[in-house]
Amino acid sequence: MAPPAVPAHRLVPLLGSALETTPAYRGLADALRLLIADGRLPVGTRLPSERDLTAALGVSRTTVSSAYAALRDSGYLQSRRGSGSVTSLPGDATGSRARVAGSALRPGQDLDDADVIDLTCAAMPAPVGTIAAYEAAVAALPHHLGGTGYHPLGLPELREAVAARYTERGLATTPDQVMVTSGALAGIAVATRALLGAGDRVLVENPTYPNAIEAFRRAGARTVPLSVTAEGWDVPTAEATLRQTAPRAAYLVPDFHNPTGALMPEEQRAQLGAALAASHTVAIVDETMVDLAHDARLDLPRPFGAFHARTVTAGGASKSFWGGLRVGWVRAPRDVVASLLAARLTLDLGAPVLEQLAMLHLLDHRDEVLAHRREVIVTNRDAFVGELRKQLPQWRFHVPSGGLCLWVELPEALSTALCVAADRRGLVLAAGPQFGSDGAFERFIRLPFTGLPSERVADAVERLAAAWDEATTRRSTRGTRPPLVA
Ligand SMILES: Cc1ncc(COP(=O)(O)O)c(C=O)c1O
Image (cartoon, rainbow, N blue to C red; front, top):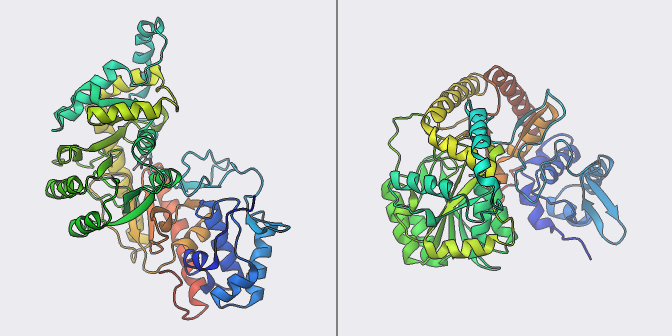
């Protein structure tokens, strides 16, 4: 079968300002390498012929042929007879710095080199209290060993605890509205399976969490973008888009949105909820970050589900506690839970019992665990913000009131070039366009500020500043060619 191809007119906007570097072939090769490594050009994609790309870019044929040759030499391109130039990864496709799997982010890359700093993942190490949670889980386990261990809807006691927490937050919930999953993303994927079919439209915030976009795309759904900035949501535009496109579902991250950190106020939840109800659109709400307010006194809005009955909410342990638990849940109207269960039964039959018991213990001790976690987040955030302001004063960002990332606006649309230059310095970043559904955000970079002990933050930002210097210097040596990005 012929490999999938990316035509020249689709590839050119993805290249950012790559050609503005000197020599131009190197800029082109670097940009293509990053697109392949972070999955925006999936492995096995046929690139345009040298002739087509030369014409589309308006450069010399030598620029394109030298770039392709450099990629072939470094293992990012293979020439196949009859298939042209096809993207590949050097050596083992799961190897060290590859950020593969469609355009999804791949967390936890187990980098061999201790000197490499990975800022692609917005997550934290396990909090104090995790061992105690597992000890309590082991102590409770004998009570469960007499059964089969299969709980496709989740352990009843955990479903009860999750339901109680929703009720406490202002969304009355009974345990039969909760299904435990292996993480929030699994909940989103199950909801996608249950609710969306090929060709269905799904409204997605732009930017957003890339793995959700990929989950919708893999289900054959068509994404409709809804703009979000660090200032928040543009509700009138959302209302108009819902009226015009009547999508089947809308994926929203209203609580410390990833990557902008925005928090949707109650009035907007009410307006958007009403618009979703009017267009018969199910909300798939991702609450992964909800526990990560930086100030415990912040008055949090009620859950989005309190404003729109047809809401499936996915939450979980990964950001509040630890990604290694792989425990999450979905909360939904009862009739939807039945569909979610049916969709999940051909997938994984339930989450591990021990981890569910550990999660139960953590929920019981959530206030102390989260208080400690908050201190670490704020210390790391302040260290990161301080270094950025010192070393890169021209970068603009809001300090969010929650979450784990800064969404930084760069002075120029050079996110891809920045990532390439950072990679050379042992700093692995996810470029802004990875968070968009349409290749935009070349002017942005997401910086998770919690993945590093605070004593390494200065080093990370030094590498970032040196990479920025390289990206801008290489660009300026080429003169004033207009940026290629739309
Ligand atoms: C917005 C968002 N949703 C979902 C996930 C994945 O959550 P889980 O580990 O619970 O599957 C992440 C992790 O980065 C995230 O940022």
